[in-house]
Image (cartoon, rainbow, N blue to C red):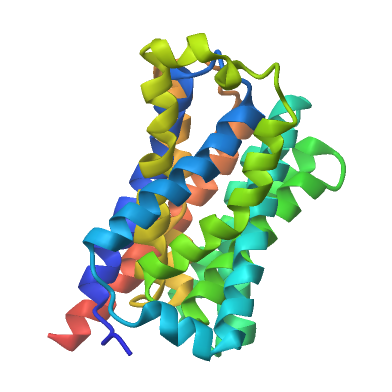
Length: 295
């Protein structure tokens, strides 16, 4: 089993959430392609690039270990189904005008991570960490109140990714081989969609003579890299810490939405973000005090 390295875990976790936070820039570059079609190609090219990367980055014996342990293969099937559910619900929300609920899911998710870490992994919170959780919960509650109804899209997104991360943390499979298996399990569904959608943009031969095709192919490595970093970080960090790092991504998305794309940012949104930012500040203070006590 890989030795725990918190510093490596922080670097990997920060890398994952920074990339996820900058995803809007990529999706803006290919916004002429329907969202569902983008997701299909994310699966296809992630499977291809993941397999190529696995050939170059040797992991001796990973396949024989999986074959000799059907339970691990079953767990990866479950984690693949969870990430597929997460992607599909997100695509549905985009295509049906439910983006507010989708964005809220990214703020609920860290709280789900904290909850799962406490209930299932036996992780415990210190006083300042409880304060941070309370502030973050207050910010999420403000968004829930603004919606005026149960945001089932948000809850599905949050719980599916929360359990996905938890399962990968508990599975003794290295990050890259695990990701390759997950994406290949999703590949038949993606290929079936392409075969049954002859009118889709990317099925037309003329599309592949345009430079936009390269952007679509890039969906593979762009999808693979942050998931690879996330899965590796989950092996080195407490799940509670990993949960709070996730606030980096929606904060970056907020800055891009307001500063680059001119979206409205009202007082209710500001109140929620202030609570979340305060939670991050308190949690960071707790980490800093803990490091000082160790010196």
